[in-house]
Image 1 (tube, one colour):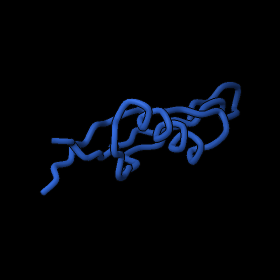
Image 2 (image 1 turned 180 degrees about the horizontal axis):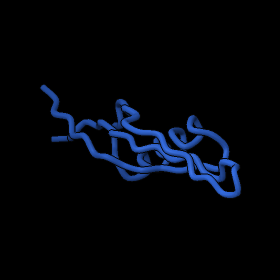
Image 3 (image 1 turned 180 degrees about the vertical axis):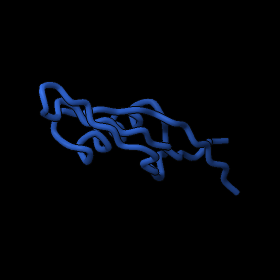
Length: 67
């Protein structure tokens, strides 16, 4: 039997929402072992002078706890 844990993280990118998710998963995988899934809970865009300057995502990352 395995046990999973879920943690919430926020990630950002100046390219796209997809890139923000990719960057978040990449960084989370450096610290958390055995990452299995991600659920994007919220998306936000920061605006400056009428243009999008940053894409932000809040996501829940699931990973397996080791014995």
